[in-house]
Length: 290
Image 1 (cartoon, rainbow, N blue to C red):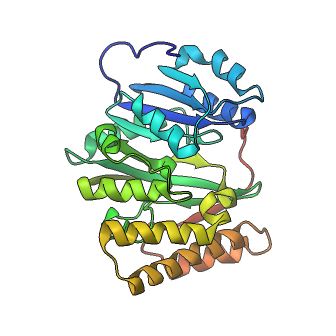
Image 2 (image 1 turned 135 degrees about the vertical axis):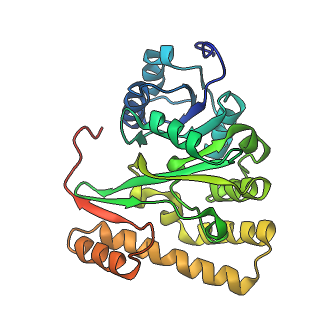
């Protein structure tokens, strides 16, 4: 159902939230979205037919939404495509259940970064904070799209803002089990390689080690290899080298999620790559975490 249309002119940003049976995670995301100030945006929520009380919570926030629906779908990427179909903003971002903006002024900062970027960018990339454990966090700053996208996603998906019409030309492929987001980003890059950047932390990502790409590394490698071959024409040795490079951050994430190895791992990464926009870590839990 449509709760209300965005008033006035076309919003700059559409925030898309996909959720299924994750009431607590959605509560945190909803609080983060509803506190955004001084920004032109709309909120689209796609629920997969939750039965745990999530729909009641969606209804309680419906006045803040441009569109919401609760119905069965064929998986997360099908749901994300539904969100894109109902997005009217010039740019869009996926903040799925459990994810949060960095602060109440995040969308305002993103709007400023878009304004300061070269005209015609296809996407804006920012930094993301990963919460790997209750006591350890990791900041990932964006890498340059060229040539990094041929190897992996340049930053967290939650810290990437896509030009909506561009993304609608490169929808998620529901047939790709794990890395359909990488596949869509690569196809968008081929259509428009121009990107803007900000080192501001604009997203808090709670999944950390629970992301599908880390829980299912072999399936992720297979999915990404298919995209690298089809979209970029990489050779098999290049694909193998890329898979090896991606394995290193997975190991680092696991080491940094352990309090006994987190500190030394973070210092080693900073020492090995001091000149790059690299992860930095802080200890201590974050107030207000849902």
